[in-house]
Length: 497
Ligand SMILES: Nc1nc2c(c(=O)[nH]1)N[C@H]1C(S)=C(S)[C@@H](COP(=O)(O)O)O[C@H]1N2
Ligand SMILES: [Mo]
Image 1 (cartoon, rainbow, N blue to C red):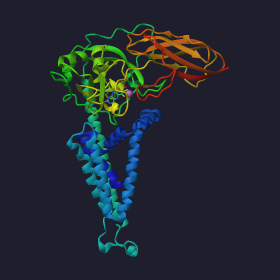
Image 2: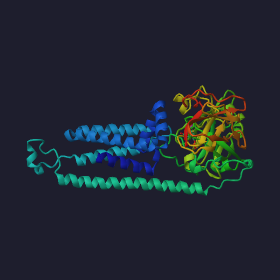
Image 3: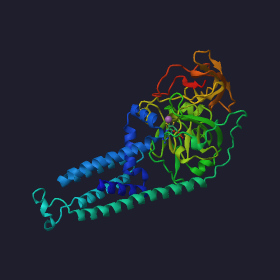
Image 4: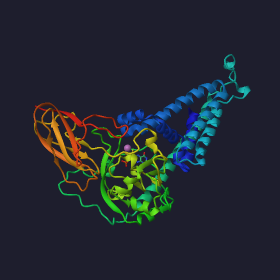
């Protein structure tokens, strides 16, 4: 186990100095994420939320330690087995690093080096003592197979020290990288929008705009990508007449729009938290694509990120839906790293997995026939308009509010279509219409509220929304897979007597 720790630390150090994404732990974690069946992934997101990633990393560390212990026991009997075991693991780690979508050849270096360090460490710990120093007492068991205690401990201490130094170095190198990109980000001066967001109408409740720190985060990235701003380019290619390449300053030099837009995740359960509204600043995408000249026959825009994510959006949506943008700002600051710095795509009215690629680097104009994007390969719907939904935020479920006037409030959304009505039902009473608070556009959620004179006892509160096409949100409960959850959000409260 010590030898494996030494090798892993060495590999992570080399990765931190060259390409953090090529480290064996993150690479193997990425492979596990990509290969996890959708049902298991859904379960993990539902059960652990954003703790799923630390849990996965811990699981990988535990599995590696168990494998290392097993190989260690085998190696104590036969040294060759140790070598074979180490070689196997190094090969697995290397394959993982090279199989990452954004991988390049040099990404095999950290793991190969780590494998070599592990092999050497294992050899040192497990080496045969010189014949003349073999402890006499062992002559009937395994004569001269094990080091004497003192030599072993000295060797182990040395390897421990080396491991700690490498691990410390890896952490320091990652930190240095992090603070360099933090400096890059804080040096960004966002230009004023040529088309600013209409001011928010008066009368909204707090919470209409989600603070960046509270904004949900959903992605497959085990380490948040840190993009080097100087070398970053946006490439528009594929079925276009004039492929375009833009640097970050060139992108910022274009006319910018600013809009309040609600973003939601298809994995959001009924009543769930994976939705938020921000004021986004960005470059309208349609004019950029028109400049590149769209070839006839294209029907999909596939956005790709620096970490190899692919997100496909219908070309008609990109061209016709208002305010589809390449966002550079979120609530008055450059995009936070977690939300896609330096540039992400935003498509109002489409779930994030089908319109909101973070850490964007390439836009490929293509067809749905030619390219299945990441989540489509995993069975999710290729086209994913947001479904009409409503959520109760107050009272909190399973609480015990006092009897008397009780505010019931929440949000509802049907981006693109707009919300026409929100109704609340207490137990089996008739549905009552809630008050809708003003909104800047149909691209955001709508806050709603009503007051109920609560009577003592256990009560059920449910909510349903109707969009402006007149469609009432369906009651039938369905899971998020494959194109978004349906059903009325329903909570229970026990009103105190
Ligand atoms: N590069 C990249 N972009 C991505 C994802 C991802 O995993 N990688 N996840 C998508 C999904 S599923 C959603 S819901 C939104 C979430 O954006 P947020 O984390 O900023 O809220 O990002 C989208 N963009
Ligand atoms: Mo999502």
